View: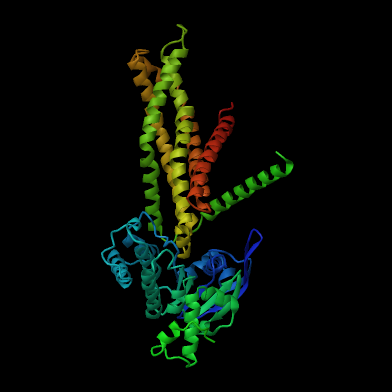
Length: 275
Length: 257
């Protein structure tokens, strides 16, 4: 389990994270959502140790990660896999070599064993026949899948995904979201996804943390989002009229006032406000 | 410059120098996997050594040739033997041209490559990806480059010495300034082996400068492709200035009787 306790981070006097505390649920898809500049990437980088918080603690299974020296951190980091926003694949290495890199660095397996494991994870992310391709030859979605394959090749306990859907079309985004969700369940990983894609929230969000201006504004499940009365959260999630209508319909549906299949046309064609 | 601006500049210099020292200190940690580090070291040896061989061969040959022609042009006195041209070419090539000129060119070739490679890795989060895996990126990315430069650049300097002297011979003979045997005899006259030692000391010092300063600027790039370009240019400029400064300091220290 990951516990975040009162972390604060600022850059040149500009406070980015202000006293954020949270508990990341084990074995679930935890989503950190928020507008651009809300501090979610800094929050994630504090969790994985790429940024050192000014104050506060990050605990992995009770061990204080922020207070560890670099050698001690290595043990925790070996349990972490991360998918970066731009995939962060090594340009000069093929897909196969990219995925094999952590195995080469941290295992004493034979080349055959490593190759077997690489093919396993590439198959798992639905990437076959791409072993010998270089990152420059791949599409955005393929790069993300290679990034996921590299992140899970050492069987990590924690999978961090920074904006996994950025730059992808809605259909490919859905494929990546489902892949992350499936991998979380299959490998029993604790997944932390940083996103502002509302489809992802509704698709895979078991536990959602909403950040606003460096503060944790709201926390809950995707079902609770629908009924939340938090104005900032509602403004962010249901920004468009379409999504506002969708929320109203889900609320009516949940309270039994409408039958989604039966009188949907009636609701859509009726301009009267739903209250 | 206003006093306040001056203070800020001084502060920036000390801050940058402090960060440079921290980078150097951070390089020394136990490698996660010796085999992978060895592979990276060999890769850097090829990149720095073989990759720069062509340009070193060309500039060394021509600087020796030009040096022979210009020395002959200035030695108009009939009392000075022609073999003196060979001596002057030999000593200028060994003392200055091979170590300093070659290293200034290598600061551009190797330095900009190191800075842009690390800068690109930083901007595209490849360095972060390595850190997340639990790899000390300073040790894995910077140390092999510095050791490879320390191994390969002095070798390139030695090659440059030989080619520079050979270039002088070819130019001298081809232009009819002096006969080959006169040139060869001149090379053996008043030879001071300490000069080669001095040139190699300079070579090792400059190799460290050429690899560590660009690595520092590349490793700490923040921003995008524009900043990578800026870092690369700054790395080359600072490396060249540092080479010239070190050249002066070493000459003052090691050539003063």
